[in-house]
Image (cartoon, rainbow, N blue to C red; front, side, top):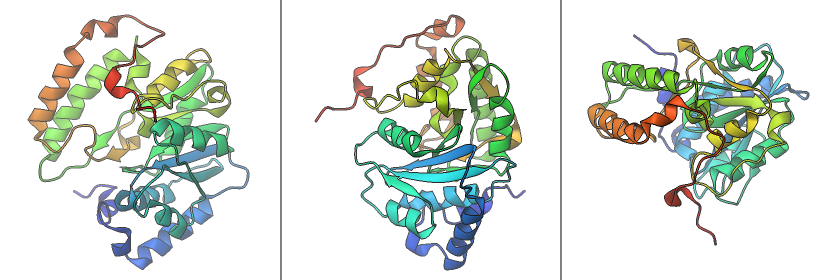
Amino acid sequence: MASWYDKYLTIYGKPFSEVPLSIVGDIRERLSRLQNSEPLVSVVVIAYNEEQRLASCLWSLSELETKYPIEILGVNNNSKDRTEEVYQSLGVPYFNEERQSPGYARQCGLEHARGKYHFFIDADTFYPSCYVDKMMSKLLKPGVSCVGTFWSFYPDENHSAFSLFCFELIRDTFLWVQHFKRPELNIRGMTFAFNADYARQCTIRTDIRRGEDGSLALSLKKFGRIAFLYHRKARPVTGYGTIGNQSMWRSFVDHVKVQMKGIGRIFHQTDHYEDSGDNLMKKK
């Protein structure tokens, strides 16, 4: 059975020069029609050396179906490939952030975005057409500062659809339990939206390799709760950066080992996390 993201996979992982001009033109036209001069929602795509995946992501965003005025922006985070050319060719307003880290890229996007509500977007991920409106249905509720949701992976030769379904079912059950006391640990940058006015009163960590999203979510809790969207059709689909190219069973075992360390954490809240040395950016 065909999936909604199958067509995006036809150009995913390919050099931008191999993307058919007809597809480039279609994406550019659709993106242009979506852009609003007075956006309520800012959809901000950060990319570091994502020439071979960015066009697929933007193709999916070009087909968003939303009732809200939006803008779609890009941040090129010091890429060494043709990422910047992809933004240019597809007509996406973008900004170059030469300081290296997801935090700097996220901060750059927030500084230039005009929408009251801000969506973090990762360039290696596809987003279903209902994504913005489903997330906004949670974000607009009273007492909510930010929203996260679950995500899925696309099947390939090393990961069957059935094995992915089982993996995600177990993972999602764990995340559901964890969200009662530690919702910030469930936040991923590719599936995160928040009130931008609140975020500008917080700090996006620029000194860590990963976790700037969860750190921001933790800071946003003082403005309202972290809500979650549980809607299968609204799930973004991404690649294997978080689980690797090994077998699904090996990925599952590795995840269990990681999560079992300090498992008691899921039963109590905290307002502070210690940084691990390997996650700190090296100072130049």
